[in-house]
Image 1 (cartoon, rainbow, N blue to C red):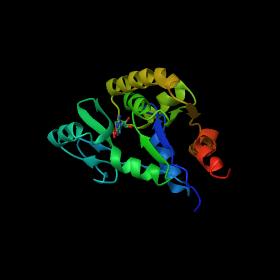
Image 2 (cartoon, rainbow, N blue to C red):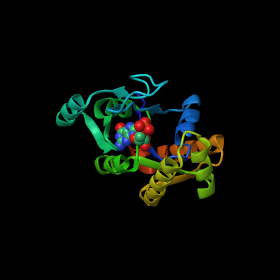
Image 3 (tube, rainbow, N blue to C red):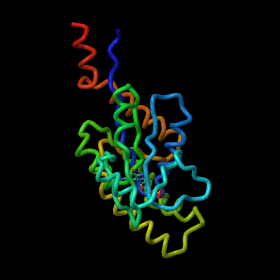
Image 4 (tube, rainbow, N blue to C red):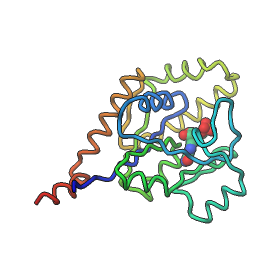
Length: 202
Ligand code: 5GP
């Protein structure tokens, strides 16, 4: 029987306004080996979100019980809410050869790298600071204060780009998605990941 390689664990981050959600949406439309992990959160469900699709929505008590039970690969308290990545499903998918993408913030990304050093981390950036400001303003939902606040957070997050393996510029959604696909493709064929297959042929 042909030997099957394990899937990649892909950590996907980017500051607010980088367009990472749109890029992820574009990748999901493509016929590639990539499944997105569904995180658990204690934050309120937003309009248009679906429980079990966007997140598993839960309460603080259940979340904290899950932490004690070792349910999460990583978790953070972001603002006043918990966010966590369920471990078991991800391990099953990766062992079965699926690439799994985690859309998480920078703190969680660091935690994933500690427990999963083999993870591939991708940081999406806008083409310029001017473009980032334009995108944040373009949302139209921002007061001047919340715009400034988001901009400050984005600047702080950008400082941590150096912790990632790949920096991908989102100047156009489709070009950015192409670049992420190129990263996934190249990582898949690294010798360290192909070794078992090669050894099996000796
Ligand atoms: P939002 O509340 O806007 O959906 O997400 C807020 C931030 O939490 C985003 O940066 C998102 O990527 C991040 N996030 C979502 N799920 C997880 C998770 O399971 N772990 C970590 N560390 N961050 C997450």
